[in-house]
Length: 93
Image (spheres, rainbow, N blue to C red):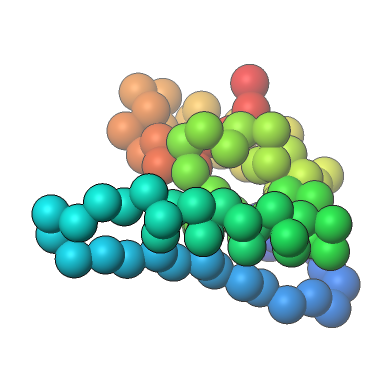
């Protein structure tokens, strides 16, 4: 497992919740729907999440998503990206 970035190696399903609306329409009901689905699924979810789907505000989930590989990945990021150019997925400090 150390040869890859992913920390969760067990059978699981991945769910990506997408809400969309026409330009100019009120997004509130669509965003509420997506939040309701996420809340309903949370008790069944593994900690963390799929790293490529986590956003910049999901730092607490990244450590779970990468598991024991987090420290190694942080070191590689510090070495190859010292200026933080690639910052879409936060690695905890």
